[in-house]
Length: 242
Image (cartoon, rainbow, N blue to C red; front, side, top):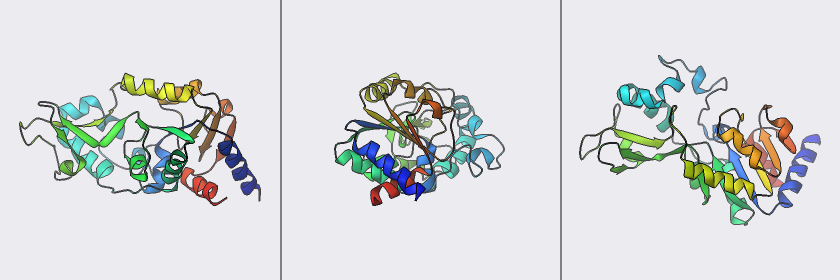
């Protein structure tokens, strides 16, 4: 009964809002089978000869592309996830005209797959890749043909995923769009993120009102107007069923 009351309160807050922005992290996609970094089953706790933070870095990519791609293809690409209740719920809010933008730290493209249109991808998207030598574009299917280093079929240049690697800066234009959307919102829904990774975690300071849905406590809970602890997708399913 207490859970139903809390979910009902979430629904009241969302129903009363007309200009919602969503800010999400890895916890949104874990329910689609994509591992996060820091949970017990996350990438940081899976045995490998290098840490994910080292492998998925700018310097490692250019210095050891073969090892980078062996890891990237196995751990990041060849998972074939599908959107979950969280993704579909947000897409439905957008169709209703209530949600104006999705700001995501995820690179999986699942928000688009679920039907969301205005998606601001802070860290890029695995579906977009380019040759660092000639600039030719490649889709995800091209990468999946390889087991090691991915090279351009025109110039043999190294193909780089259009994702933000460790040691790289976020695109300033993308970050500005996220700030503008959050500043103009009457509710920022935050879901599936520990709010430990910057600059994404710093975006909450631009919000007028914050509703946080996360599996565990975060260091930013005290700055939120309402906090609910639970899996984001399951919570969205319960919201849809009310």
